[in-house]
Length: 486
Image (cartoon, rainbow, N blue to C red):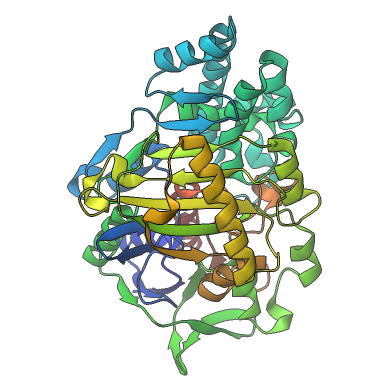
C-alpha cells in the first residue's frame, strides 16, 4: 500500500485525505495546531461559539457532491438551514435586504431602482450559465495547461475573461447601492471587481440563485463531518505536529520531519500555505522565488473581533454588510496603495440570530471582520483603534448602544494569521482570482522540481473560498491516483 503524508488539516487537506484513503492509500495527516480545521477552527468561550474563519455557506451543491463521493449526505452530519433573509446591507441612508429567492430580491431591487429587476433576472440567468460551466468544466481541471480552459462552452465566453465584473454590472445598473450589492460576492475571490474577469459573475448566481445557508452549530460542523469521514476511511491524524522539513533525495520526496522525527512516505501533499511549504524544502528544490511571491496579488487579510454580548441585539440579521462608506476607496487601500483603511467597510456575523446553540440564552455571539491589505503593521493600539471605529458605526447604523454590553472580546489579525497558519504576509484568503492568476497561471498543484510532491489549497487551483478548497483537495488526489496508474 502506497503511503501519503498530508501537511495541514484545513478543508483542502481533509478533502485530499478522504479521496486518497478511499482510493486505497495509507494516509497520515500532520497538523501544527491542537485541533483540525486550519483556518476554519472554532472558538468556544463562556457558552458562546464562534467560527474563527469562514462563516458563509455558499454553493451547497459542492458540499453535497463531496459527501456523495463517500456515499454520505450532509444531513448525516449536520442540519442545514437556508437563511431568510440571506443578509442585510447597511448604507448611510438605507438598508437592502437580500431575501431567500429571486422574487424577493427582484422586489427589493425595484424598490431601489425602477426597472432594475428585469436586468437582474437576465444578469443572474447569464451568471447561472457561467456557474454550470465553471463548476462542471473549468474548476475540475488541475491547472496544468492553458488548454484546460478551452472547451466548446468557454470558447463562446472568451470575451468574458477580458471584461470585468465591474464593467458588466455598471453597464446595467446605475444605482450605486445596487452596484455595490452585485460587486460584493466577487470580494470572496479576493480582488477588486474592476480586476476580476466577468466570467466570475457565477458568484452572483451562487449568492442570489443558490442562497445562503447555515449549518446548525456553525461552519466547524463541516470540519467535524470531514474528519469523521477521513477517520472512517482509515486516515491517521496527528495534531500539535508541525512539519518542519520536507525530506527530499535525488529530487524525489521521501517524507517530512515533525517534532524531530522523520516520517517517510511515497507522496507528500501540503495543504499548508504554499509559500511556507516551499520554505520547508532545501532552496534548490523550491519552484518559486521570493520575488515571485512578492509580486502576486493577494486576497485581503482581515482584522477580526469575536465578541460576546450580554443581550440580544436589534435591527440585525445573521449576516450583515456595512457599506456606508466609500467601497472604491477601501478597495484601493487594500489593493492599490496598501494601508490601514481610512474609513473601512466591514462585515458582522451574528449566528445566534438564527441558531440558539451559538450563544447563551438572551445573549448574542458577534463576529466582526474588517478586510485589510496583507502585510500591514499589526499592533494592539491599531486593533483598539479599529474596534472603536467599528463599534461607533455599528451603534449608529443599527440605532442601539452595545459597547456596555460587551462581556468579552478577542481579536485576530495579520500577526495571528502568520503565527497560527504560516500565512504569507498574513493573508486571510489566498491568491486573488485576477486574469493573470486564473487556472494554469496559479502556483501548480504538482511540484516541477520534486517528484511526488504536491500542493493543495487557496494559493493554488481553483482559488480562494471553502467550496474551491474542497475541489482543490479532490484535484490533487486525482493527480496522485493518475500518477500511480501510469
